[in-house]
Amino acid sequence: MYKLIAVDLDGTLLNSYSQVSEKNKQAIKNAKNKGIEVVLCSGRGFASVKSIANETEANNYAVCGNGALVYNIKNQKMMYNNFISIQLFRGGQL
Image 1 (cartoon, one colour):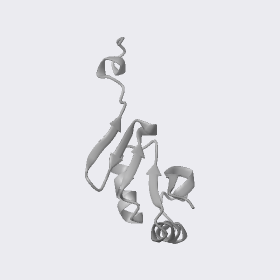
Image 2 (cartoon, one colour; image 1 turned 90 degrees about the vertical axis):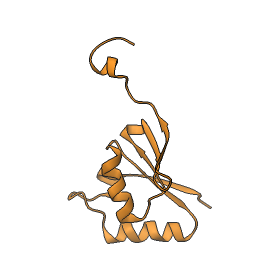
Image 3 (tube, rainbow, N blue to C red; image 1 turned 180 degrees about the vertical axis):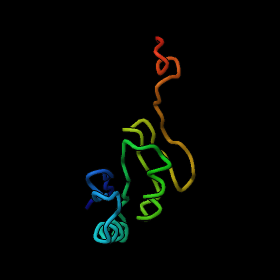
Image 4 (cartoon, helix red, strand yellow; image 1 turned 30 degrees about the horizontal axis):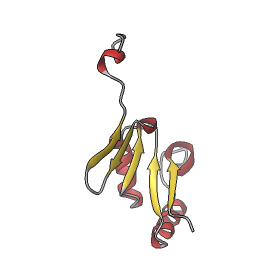
């Protein structure tokens, strides 16, 4: 029995129009009805993932920013983050 399904957005869950098909929405609903946690994963930022999570009702957890952020949507809390420091971003050294 599966306990969790982690699914990528772009090129996997979303079609070429960046929409979730009814077939995929139904598959997520079926998984949830079986007690399986569905987690959306993406290189996108959280705001973009959150809207898709709400649309698909896979809205408990999300992995965003290529794994740099794990967010508990239900409790609105960051569970993990590993962002690049502003110094490194600006070309400095750590």
